[in-house]
Image (cartoon, rainbow, N blue to C red; front, side, top):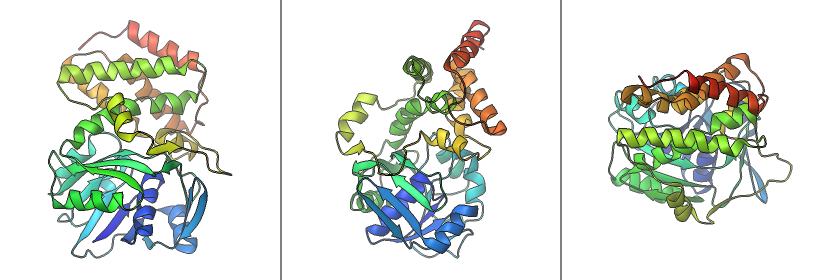
Length: 324
């Protein structure tokens, strides 16, 4: 089995590096300066207490497929279709991504699709470099067939990941875990916009509560934070790495890299979409979606919006919003 990791950033780079260290054949797919750095100097993987340069094969273009190839898609959701377009549609695809829309979009094009719920505290800002802060395991990964079920491939993938430094489990209800992760990811936009400003926790609670209310109304099951904490335990603690300042979420990193795009349409935007379908007002997520996209377009630095300004926008939107 060859694992082809499309999007070798924080998540994809860590998964690819750990599988490579575990003795598996891995090919990293990257773009631009990151690809050039991987090609010329390998992947520099930093973890708590270690630093290693791994000469993992890398390319910036599709390669001829082989029997046993598995695509692990770790791009941002807005890049999903473009990233998969060049690849043969008989290959299995594992969506190691935030949000819940990717699997459905991929299933239109590929027959075998797998969801992966990713809890993986990692950072990718500099080309050729990934910092994985999780210890003693790099992350916790649930994987299963989409829309539900467990088959031989999902079991093999979970086993390979578990032997390569992850807490990994093949689970038939992987999307329930991904919806639970979605609720946590709704706060990514808050952090990206305002950083760790004093008082930000109350806004985290507000955006999550709005999202949970929408999922409840839609009848969509989701894992709870207590369930996730109990399963994870102390298996993926976030520890510092000497010489590397830990940044924020994937959305924060998108702004830090001035990438010009952000994943808010598939995080906060998922709740906005469901709210419109079920006639539920979602002013908090609407404002966060709009402002995160504005920051990305304008390439504004992460954490540069005053919290009181963001709260005022949300309050104003709340006063003028009624259910559809």
